[in-house]
Amino acid sequence: MNPHRSPSPGRQLRLPLSRAPSYRRGDFIISAGNVEALAALDAWPAWAGGRLALVGPEGSGKTHLARMWARAVGAMIAKPDGIDISQLAGQPVLLEDADRGLDDATLFHLINMADAGGSLLVTARVAPRDWPTDLPDLRSRLNALMVAKLEAPDDVILQGVLRKFFRDRNIKPDDEVLPYLVRRIERSIPAALAVVSRLDEAADAAGRKVNSALVREVLEGEDESLDLFE
Image: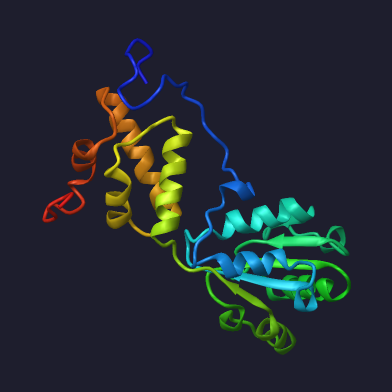
């Protein structure tokens, strides 16, 4: 941002600060695609066997929901590349991306710890019954895991996160921008963050507000055959 340029219409003067991701409950946008998963997490510690798998596609909000739960219950966050089972026994544990790269023996022990008085929340893109394993005992435990499903973000979620990302950057886009972006971008939260970042940079560089004309200029290369904003 040019420190000598006046802020463009539709935004206040802001400092170039980077924001850490917020996993607060108040920032979690509830819709038909995630309300059941939220209820399942809220049912802790009454999970069957003390275990729950939170399953959904990339960008569906798994990390936000899982970190929100971990903060609320004081859970330890296990790192797949350095799990020390002895430090996790008897307490709530969060393991993200459990379907990618974790060895069978470690996963088996984590599941058994939940049986012994702890709690285990795992996140994954696919259901546990579809995870590959050569251990019969682990296979049976994966098949028995309680599953809470998240759907891909719907219009309610996408518009809500776009509004939040713009607000975080102190930007007030024109009214037609959010509905258009909901129709146009990939249906994921990372995609929403990426497009807001691009629009922020473009508006800042040109000293303009975020309106339909700017969105056309930024996104027209993705699909020049579309007649935008019709």
